Image (cartoon, rainbow, N blue to C red; front, side, top):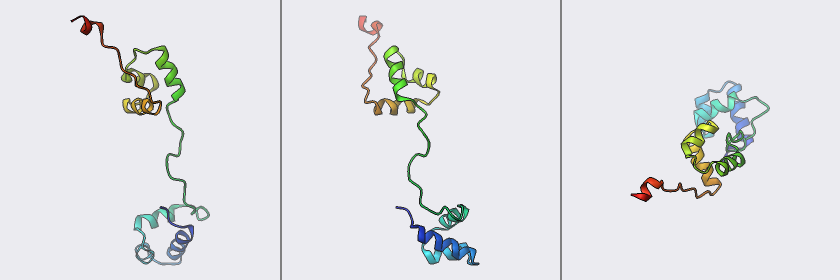
Length: 112
């Protein structure tokens, strides 16, 4: 839940008119950190921002699928190195793709 624009404006106005940041936090029942954050915003942009990731994803899922089809023997570690991401990124991407990718048992184990 985000704070209303009206509350944000009242807190900022209070501090800019000479009130202390600590007093503003106490009066308006918000944290001091929140007061500092609102004061650091441009005066005309006190609107709450949309939550969640701001940038695009680093990993192209379609390209990952193509590489996996072309090279089914590649491990997650090798895929991570090829795409320049960490292993967990590949793991979560495979979950998003709903890929149930199990490597075949090596023939050395099968013949034993």
